[in-house]
Image (cartoon, rainbow, N blue to C red; front, side, top):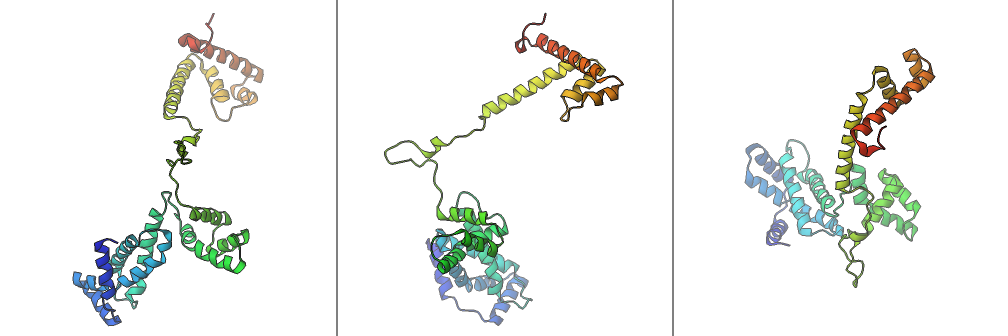
Length: 284
């Protein structure tokens, strides 16, 4: 623990306990007069609470000094928000802020993958080990589906969420740059396969798509009004219209619609190939 943290802990352990009346008076001095000495006295007297709570979270593998510092931030936040006119002890009010500050710090730093984004997930993250250990002690053996089910019911989550969280808590982060074995220079990242297109492929496909859309718009200008309507309704809409529906709308037979469509598509092909010969054989 750094020197600043040690001094903070030492001051906390030697600070006198506050009676209700003293606590109330200090809180009023800070709230009404912005008395910084009063703020210091009331927070240093409750640093024991911060240290005790930090000890409860030490099994997450984070520095006690950092947990105490985060708890101190929560304590200061509680002091800033505390209303002395309410008949509530400051320690009762501050406990929630201290715990919330430490839990947020743990969730941000326990893993590079952020977990516990919802209240239910946070409850699962911080209570799974305790509940699982208690149920395993009663039932014996490794975690079972029954254990997961009972934990899920207690925390109002699904059994799959319990199973995934249990897996996460069982192992820490692994660097992708870790070598597969001591004698090999190969790293884990070299064996990851990504099926997504590369950035240059994405850009190339986007440019090609925009270019083809422009060519199509230019070719469509060669069609007359009825041909254009039939091509748009039959080929360029998500729900292609039927020959019968278009025939009824245009007052012609469905066979005539088919003939016009075939002629329009041929006109489009000719227009595209003439402008861009690479798209097909020469037009006679």
